[in-house]
Length: 344
Length: 280
Image (cartoon, rainbow over all chains, first blue to last red; front, side, top):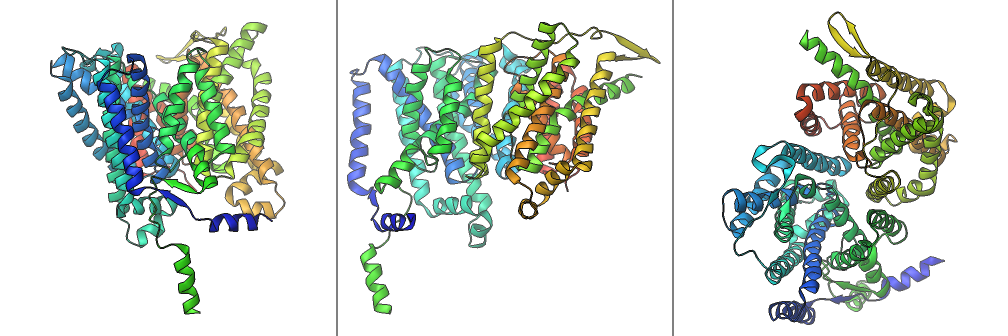
């Protein structure tokens, strides 16, 4: 019954939106965002929203890279957000350095910590990995709560003179988001990237055809750690204060999961849509204090049940197009047919 | 003497941790699901006992007569209405659904019961027995007995009854069990019901022993998970031993570093022997 329909849709050619035209569109959008930010045409309120969207896109892309493309579902990415926030706070307020030094230290710490953690975490798969990452975040949070160097639970503030203004933080967030998306897309297009999805779908089979599982996982984990840390650092530069309870908060993971699930897990464009919806929705839900997680959680559950591919995943399937696809579409179907006929 | 006191404190804590973990280990072993909302259900049980005991003016332990069946029904409803459906889509979506459930429950409890600290008081809460120079709180002994009785009843149920046997059969080989006429969906629903019933007991213990908040679920989930991992998933005797190990770790770390010591122990265990001490 349904077979005819699926067959018909399978034969319908998939439109791949990439190459030069897509590149031009992307460049125009990004350039417009830069120009409108620099010239001050955007109000600072609008820039705050956009800044949040850019940072959440970055966080979402990284969680998606781990979970959606590599099969490493993490519930502990807040480890790197908290560490980055505290790096910036410690460097600027304890050592009186500039924010840039703080961000550099945040990257180095993310690199070192992710390398160290990989030895422990990569021994686990699936839900064990997921919960172990969460345990790590909670352990670091508990440690920070009683560590004098980071003012225990009392929180720290980020100091700088002059303190970056909203347009500057906006540009930082935009730049970070663009780089993160380019890195994810470029990584997925390489041979390693194809290996990642192969690994997600069947670790043993991919390993037997030559995918180096440990190396690929490590690469992805370190990239995700560094960009998550960068986004966390910019977040807390904007917030100005950090507490262990806000830095290592599980609600960071809640937002990442929400963004990726809603947008479409395993698609590069999904987190963009997800992050826009998330930021707008949180703005609306701020008027209903206490209800935001209830509504976000309910939406996420409904999407998992009824729209498991998310918004972008479903649209791509229904409308037969692929945006920022990692697949390499080979020769058109016609040629294949003639080849087959020739062989016959 | 100090060492003996520490060990006894650890053992007494261990009972509570074992009952915290036993519900999660069942779901792990039987339904093959990580229930990330287990901590929230424990806290829900704690609220149920605390508020009922206050409202009716009875001993908190008596409230189990109400909270255990209620939580059993919630568990069955949850599994039938929601989790059985998502489990068809794979284990990752099911994990994320329980994660969504946990944040919903946490904020719902925050709205319903406010952010105030809660505690269930009983007449014997501050009675301390002195046995040969060692101080033992009467409450701790009562809680240990409650935990052990719960685990004993559960073990007997799984070993002696038809339903219990079919649950174990499903856990060993889902397909073979369903060929023998066991309804897998129904078994899953009952297993989830039982798991939440034990969460009600764990909630009572936590309400009596400590103060708790609507947001406390996450830390109890991690303890429960630790007990599950150290004990070996699906193993009920394992949870007893693991509860003990965790209780001792907590006591050794003291008030400030107890939780940190337990977390580090858990991470080491995950890395070295993820299948646990008592895996099948």
